[in-house]
Image (spheres, rainbow, N blue to C red):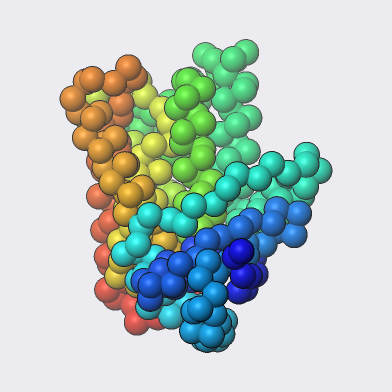
Length: 286
């Protein structure tokens, strides 16, 4: 029977600890307790209880120590966590808590959802306001919000769900660790760069948050590698999946049209921002 070691309120910390314990050849699993919003790390080999407990105590004192983040980075096969369904009221409570901790990520999620729903009824009016225009037109009419506009509109349910899931996961992680202002700036830069790149390569008829999502992937990936003590984390397996998906977009084998230029430009922009920020700072930005 597994022995409980420690209860942790955030999955990324529970995963970091579990990865480090596994790197020390200590077999553990994570058991979620949704009603209490906790994750319990369970020891599967009682003969290593004292050693595991000592590691847990050290983790509590310094959960952002680079060695834990590095273990999570190297052991990208995350600890298996069984799915647990919670009641509707508890789901709403967790959602509201998440919005309070990451308000800008929540704002973009809500805004994209409202726009996606409204476009079923008023497609032309919304598209005419948010779609990007050729740069010559923007220089004349000064409707600069159109540089951001395509990031807020989606044309299919699959595209909408895919982008918003990644935005919710990565955007909230960045906002909790580096602040709302930083996520806003990161969103604006990656949206503008990816949208302009797609405009120049393929014209103005596109939309979606994908360029920003790939910007977040690049940013969290490089930051987690160079500054693991900042608490940002993306498993290598997920990075690999997103890169493969990016490459497949250029092969025309997918059933959807991919904004390849936006994806590539967003990814590169996120990586560059992460490199500049982490290499130019000795500590977590305030």
